[in-house]
Amino acid sequence: MKLESIPPLPALAVGRHLIADLQGCDVAALADPALIAKAMLAAAQAGQATVLQQHFHHFGAGQGVTGMLLLMESHISIHTWPEHGYAAVDLFMCGAANAEAALAVLEQLLRAQRIERQVMIRGFTP
Image 1: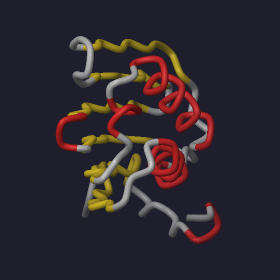
Image 2: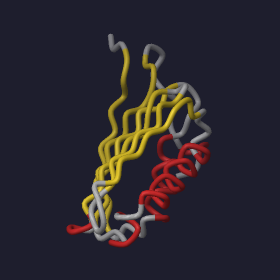
Image 3: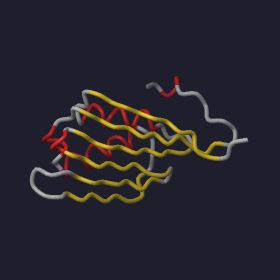
Image 4: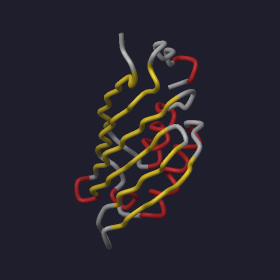
């Protein structure tokens, strides 16, 4: 999704919280902690976010990865299940950061065949 097609946040909102289920992903990619880290960092860059810290945990050969990027604009996390070709992704980005652009990178690099997504506007509502 192009940045110019994303509607502006309501006046009192602080950011968008995008939750996505990526299904039919590349099984080998989901079990590769280096690839997951590279994909997450590329997603943060595409979303114009600033990474403050990162942590990734691999559960062993052929198993999944849990990863977290702490962002100046909030966070991106991922949990993968290679045995199901599935990744759960959570992107909360404030300000001008673009969660949709970040998710597009993850979809492409993990070769997701199906994406279920939910967007919440976070912050104060009248």
